[in-house]
Amino acid sequence: MTGRQHHRPMTPGDAFFDEIVGGADPAQLREAGDLAATVLVRGAREAHDPALVERVVHLAETEGLETLAEVWSGAPADTLAGSLWRLFLLRSWVHADPERVSREYEAGQRRVDVARVVAGVADPPGPAELRQMVDQVLRGIATGDFAVTLFRAAAFARIVAAGRAALGQASHEEISRMLVLSEQLEAAGHGEIADTLA
Image (cartoon, rainbow, N blue to C red; front, side):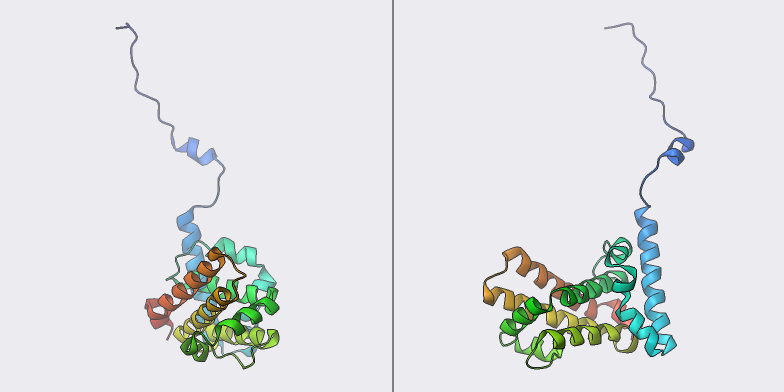
């Protein structure tokens, strides 16, 4: 045994932590995201302003998808913020690659008949029709029943997943990702957030 004396470890004071530069507090970021989502949806619904509705639809374009990701992408799927993130992500994907979406939707629509009716896409579903459909779905954030908005988006994602599987050109991960998106949107439509906005 050594004759060395042991000391209690020093603990840093509050000033130590104040000096550390780091990212935003996740709890505060989530709270801000939830608040922003609520203000966006309720404000657009109460305004009854068609120009504001169009601003909501084009939010990812004007503010940037990266900005929305910072605020909403970490939110659970069953929250308003998480649902909005998934809706805007879906819209951005459809607008970025409408030809691929059209092929996948066309291949999947006959395999999931009920989802095809719920999604409400014109037949035949060309790139322009799919862009119009996804924009119409997002208008539901401000003008329609929020649960219906989520169910339509979920049905659309389910059809695309079926189409990806039928075509055999997408990876298992791409098919699964679309199925998970569909399930998340559908579950959110059945959840409390849709009821609070009804």
